[in-house]
Each structure stands twice: as C-alpha cells, then as structure tokens.
Image 1: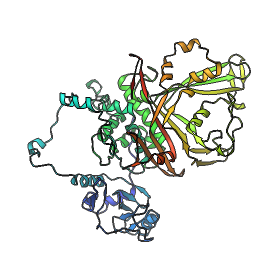
Image 2 (image 1 turned 30 degrees about the vertical axis):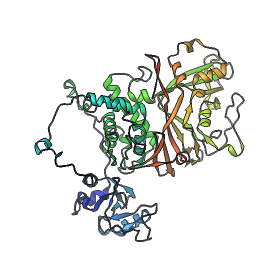
Image 3 (image 1 turned 180 degrees about the vertical axis):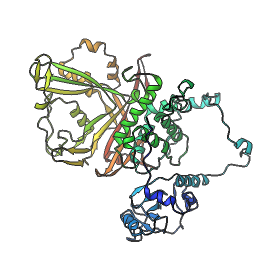
Image 4 (image 1 turned 120 degrees about the vertical axis):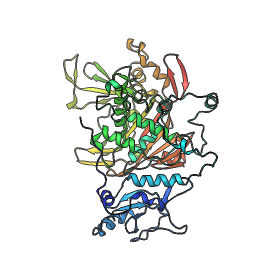
Length: 561
C-alpha cells in the first residue's frame, strides 16, 4: 500500500521560490525579537506601519502585511486587490505579517508555511538569547556530534530529592506554569493547535508521556525489530511518538512558540482524506488522532479493542467511557439494553429545542414530572440542561419502530441514554454546527453556554437513572457490575475549553487552559492570562473535565489527580 503524500504547497509560494529571488532564509536580518520572544519585522522605534489604500494603523485589531517584492503594506481587506494588481510581475502574492513574522499569501488569503523562513525565525530567536560565559563554552571536540546508544534515565539522589519536594508539572511560577508554550500556525491549523493544547494538559495523558511510558527512541514503529525489518510499513508514522516529542518540547522550559510540523505531516499520512491546508473541524481532528494513537499502540502491544473494557491503549484508558441505551416497548414493557463505547459525548446546545433551527420539539418525552421550560429562559443553555436532555427518554418516530422480541412485531418504543462508565477525562462536544436536510441550509448556533467548573456526573449515570425508574431495588446484574466503582468517582473539574469564533464557512479556534487556578488563553503562538469571566462568556465548542479522584481497583484506595 502506497503511503499518502502531503498536499501540494501554495502554488504562489512555489513560484516565488523558483523565481530568481533571494531565499527566504535571508530575511533573518529583517527580523527582530521582542523581550518575551515574539518575532516581528524590524522597523524604527517611532515607525507606525499602516495600510496604503485605507491608512489602517497597526495598533488596531486587524493585521498588516508587507509585500516581499515591493514592500507595500496592506490589510487583509486589500490583500486580494494587491495580488491582482501585480499580476504582470510574479512574487507580489507573498507577504509577511508585520507584527507576527508569519508568511501570508495575498492571492489565497491564507497563511502559508515555508521551512526556510521558519528556520530564519528560529535563528533570530536563538540569536536574541544571552550568550553563555567563556568558561562554560565547550571545546570543539565536545561540540562534535556523536551517535550514542539510548539509556533510560535514572535520577541521582539530588534529583530524587528535588522530585520529592516539588511536582515538576506545577512547580513553575503562577505567571508561567510548566508546559505552557504557544504553537505556531502552520497555515490554517488553529484546529490542531487548540486540540493539542488540551491534550498537553490532560493530567492522565500528561503523566503517561512525561513518565516515559511511551518513548519515541525505542518505539517498535520507529525502530523495527530485525525479524520485521523486511516489512515496508514498520517505519510508518507514529502519532504517539510525535505527541511524545511535543510533550518534551512543551515541558522543556522553553517559552518560544513550537512548530508541530512533524505531527501535522504524520496525521496527514494517517488521514489522507483530510490532508489539506483547509480549515478542519476540531472535534473531528480530536477523534481522528485518538483513533490513530489507539491503532499505533494497540498494534505494538498486541491487544484488541475490546480487551480490558477499553484498557488496550492510553487513549482509551483516558477518554473511553461506556454508554447504555435502553429501548422499551410501550405495548408490553419489554426493554432491550445495549452498551457501546464512546470517546466523547455530543450534546445539543438548545435544551428543550429541536436541533433543526430552533423549532420546538413536540416529541420530547417528559419523565419524573419534568417539563421543558418556556418563556424567556427557554434559550438559556446550560451544560446540566444539555446532559439532562441527553439522558431523557424520548419517543421514537413511527418510521423508527422497534422490533419487540416479546411481541414479535414492530412496536412504538421509548429510548433512553445513560452513562454506564465514566472516563478519566470527559470530553463534551457542543453541537454548534447544524445542517437541515429539509430546508437545505446550514448555520452555526451562537448561543452562549453556561458551564460549571466543578461538575457532578452522578445524576446521569445508569445506576442513578435505573434507581429513579425502578426505585432502590438491586438487580442481580448490578451486584457484580465491575463498573459500579465509577459511581463514587463522579465529580469532575474543568481544565480546558476549546472555543470557536466566526461563521460556519470559516472561523478560528482558541483554547483556554486552567492551570494553578488561573486561566490562560492559547491563541496559536500567543499565550496570555485572562480573567474567569472571559472564559465563561466564550462560545464553548469542546469542554474537558478530569476526575477529581482516581480509584484503583487493585489496592482499593483513592489518590488525588
């Protein structure tokens, strides 16, 4: 099977490189680095760039770009006009962001990535660092590269005492927690950066990779065994190894933005249908990388998907839960129960409303005397109300009649979902993008969602729903249920929120991280501290919660996360 290739780069950037022009690496002399490590185009201290057509100043919220051929400055509104006005001579389509030092194609109206220019930015950032003292400078012989065998790290007494006195993941100052590092946008890749920021700070996943549980230097997919070396697919891209490299870079102490280009290329190899520079959905990307990490580690450990209730790989041990579906015949009361694994839970945003453009749902089933709220508060969406709607029984349509095994024919039925087993990290996907097949229209729901920072999932567990339906009777299957311990670990704490701003056709993803009881906004390469109300008023698209307490079945004791 042939390995899928990466999508072709921007044709205008390729034409610029092929033309008789100086390489983009020569732009290093035009870059300067601010004290916090942010690169920008070098200019005079009092110089204020502005758009030539509209005199748009750079201190506004819009970005400004400088053409690499004629040095003309223009804003995104006049990018296409500048590219079309200069069609007689090639090269005017490529520009550079004045304040962020990022390449931009005026014809494509999108960011582009070039390895030579990225190398120039890295050299400019490294040259701004303070030089080491002469006494600490190594000799030329020591600077010569050597190939050495990998050896597992073992702490010495001093390092062991340091680890015992402080947690390396939280010992940094409140202004700069450990692992907080920006990720460069490689060309419309904010969807990838937002998900990676959430994965980098998921406590169980973070402890797994920082604990050297998956080492990229000794991974069988990177270093195949001699008896398997004849197989051409042994050295296929391993997303777990690339993620391990990102963890090492994020927690290395460096604050300059990191470029996850290798991870992006590996994901393109696994998901060739999504290999493009177009904007992708962050939720689809999240599910895709978890599936591919599962395939990589599962194949190496020779475990099946069903082994150990989702314990076959780290992706399933952290994010995998089990949903219970009960379909009850309204004629005889027979109930058919099925279980299915899930990596996340997708929730409708408007509780009490149909997902098709705000039309009231007449088939919403009411249980326990609870009714859909009306009036002005009907569109007040909360995470608890979305979960209540998810676990509320609903009457199936006439065309979805259930075949009852007792009646031996299709009957009308009620379907109710519940959570049988909670994962260590619960991911809630908010359905903000709606598609109506009847009206043949699509839209984005911009309603605000209220969500708590501490969440109790006990009311939505299968045990709680069965107890409310049948009382406190204990069924034989519940007495020996291995997942009953998860009822005691139903309290969760939020640690990441992925938001989407913009329209359905295009937008921007941003991640908010909760570290050391402070919130930080990760907008690609830019990481800033924000207040709590900024997070609460954002348009949440994906919410990540982690269990407050982890219960271990072997020793039957509780340990804090």
